[in-house]
Length: 378
Image (cartoon, rainbow, N blue to C red; front, side, top):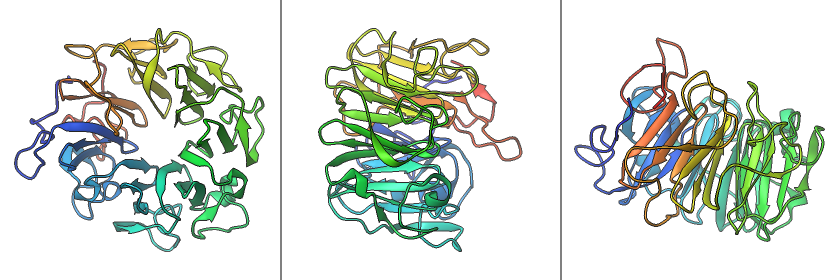
């Protein structure tokens, strides 16, 4: 059911496409985007507006060229999409129901992209369900209507523009978010989180809402990745810490019960050099070139359907072990709402999990295979 998508669906070049090899993957909420070495990008799955296409089919069942994403270094998406290219200002576009693209609640869709004014240089962008954020000049700025629902912004109302999160000071390096909460990684490796906390997703040792960013007690990390209601962090030694929980009787941290404070993920069986999290799943790439994932298995993200995701599972792609020869700036693994995509060392993109996120007549085609079957379990 899977096979390589390169060439056959336009990822590797051809009419209307780029000419470079695939160098990384970017998330697209209910789909993904592949970026080539020449900077061009192709996307599949959710909403043409949310990948910067201002006209066309609203749902893409096969990779579609996305000129607005040429050369981007980072992409985050919930209802709206925001991108970062180099250290310049973030650009946002897409559906604007939470004022994530522009700070005007009367605007339903934004296309083409509009810049968001935050201090430069910008080193990270992040998205939560009702807020977008960026790290500019070391400070964290957030916009959207998250104030009314989750307390992301302080002293601002409704759809006001970017608001500085004063409690985080000016030493931040990364921002990421989940459903109703945000986490920032500081330059010294500390992680600070705030927002909703019903499943311990803030890692504070309790399940109470936290409206002011508070430090997560764990070793310093070099990278964070945030899922629906959990988070993970990678240390310089390649250890992975996880906190929070998930639904559907799954263990989003690879252990049971789900921790409200960070714990070392057991069962990865080796040091890692890349992490990814979104929805109800997390994945890592081990130093020995093995892809390992855990979390939900409702749509065969880990193994055959109807079996519980009981902990980290080695994911066997076709051919040689996973991992491109040298890690680039772009991620090699991306996780969508209910599916996973990975860039194999042979240059092919593989996707598996839920394909038909919405029921007919408007299925998303989250996997980009050109098919509308419900799920792909291989």
